[in-house]
Amino acid sequence: MDIRQFRYFLAIAEEGQISRAAKKLHMAQPPLSQQLQLMEQELGVTLVERKRNGKKLELTEAGKILYKKARNMLEIFEDSIQEVKETGEGLKGTLSIGVVRSCVSYLPEKMDTFNKLYPSVSFKLTGGDPYEISELLERREIELALVHPPLEMKGLVQIDLGKEPYVFVFPKDWPAAAGKHAMAFKEIEDTPLLLIRRIMGQGIYEQIIHECERLHINPRIICECPDVNILLSLVASGLGASIVPKTSILPLLSEQVKVVEITDSTLYSDTALVWSEERYLSQAARRFIEMF
Image (cartoon, rainbow, N blue to C red):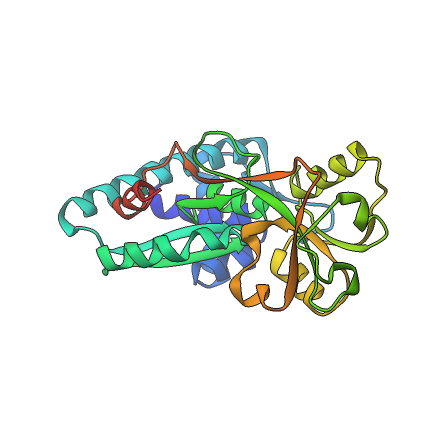
């Protein structure tokens, strides 16, 4: 077996279908099926089997072992190639960063400075929920990530970027917030709320619920969503209010909503720059980390 076949097998294992794997690899389905058969013949074992519905492939025990070993070997191979290439090329290429949308405000100034220092490096940004970002890190589709901890992934290195308070966010013309720059939690008890909630794991939503319990408040939640920009757009449209980290409100949206400080809450949000300690980081990634 060779590196090329490892790539084929990993694509089949991750996509769960020959057709989808072939599309991902930009090749026809019959040659990929043939390569799978050749691998199984060479190893003398069955690597995948069809599930009962016949549509999705599932790894056998032998397949699971090969997947783990092949993935590790491919990662080492790719890291080695990247490291060798960078010794002679200098700082250029693409730096891939994942970002939870409520952390976007940390990026513009750093990206602008970085671009002036290293004009041959471009950025590829991917937004998502913390769960989605951790998946991208594990699949090595991004090198760095800006998130609100905790992130349910082992082997992470992180730089803490500080704490920030939560704020109430109301539709611009709501009478309840007119003339106010600060409010107590109790004042929003009957207000329809739109809250950020992760796809998986604990986060902002659970913090807010715990705070409501501490203050003996029964919140009226009408919507949950993992995307802060969608929530704030709905707030701007007049649907309801929200509770978010202060820096998650971008300048464009801040003109469309009313932001009010919370007077009686201990709620705050952590933000961190994280990466996997198990992978080789490009020179561009290391230079970007130094800026924090």
